[in-house]
Structure formats: structure tokens, C-alpha cells
Length: 147
Image (cartoon, rainbow, N blue to C red):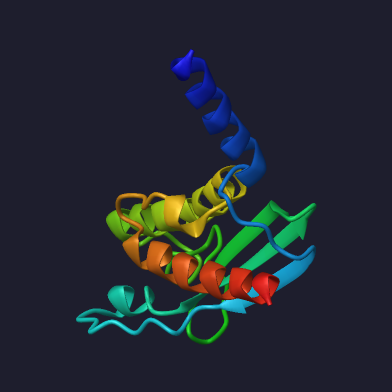
């Protein structure tokens, strides 16, 4: 009997808190991370410099959409051309790494939407800078939703 009561209590608590446990004001919230500037030793590495921007939509108190993009310091988006030089792939290793980091942006946004908590978003190997930018920007955006 105690087992069933405990199970019922746990299920009730889970239903009351929901996924992620947080409830936010409905709306769309945006935030930007600080600029990341590395101690680059090459021109290619300096392209990793930049910042991230997040846009989070909340409906019914829950995160219903998230978009995360990264930019170079001059505001150029890190898109499908990120890692190319003069429009061409001149260093395949750097391009592949840059594109893996870019793909991680969508991964981080999807994880936040699914899990409902920045703290539950897992880092993607090879995209740690993006992860830190994402966490910083997403935390700032969700803080707006709490106010």
C-alpha cells in the first residue's frame, strides 16, 4: 500500500512541475552572448571568434521554439559558407570542424525545446565554444521570460 501511495505522490508532483520544471511568461525572447575572442595563431582560427544569438518562444508557460545562430565579430553569419576562404574550401579539416560547430547550433536549440531547461542541454564534442555561447544567451533570454 505504501508503494502505491508513494508512486501516486511522485506522479502528482511530476504532473504539477511538468517537463523542465520551469514556467515562463508567454512571448518571444532574444539574447546575445558576449563576444568570444581567442588567442588565435592563424587566420583560420581567428574566424572562430564571434558571438551567439538565441530566440526563444514560450507558449503556455513552456518553451515551444528555439533558434540559435552564431556570428563572426563583424556580424557575418556562420552559415553553410563558414570555414570557407574566398568562397572555397581551402582547408578541409577546418571547414569540417566549422560545419560541425554550426550544426551543433541546431542541436542545442532542439535540446532546449525538448528538455525545457538550459541545464539539461548536453554539449556536442567539437562545439564547446558554441555551447558556452548558447548557454549564456539562452539563460539571458529565459531570465527575461521570468520577469
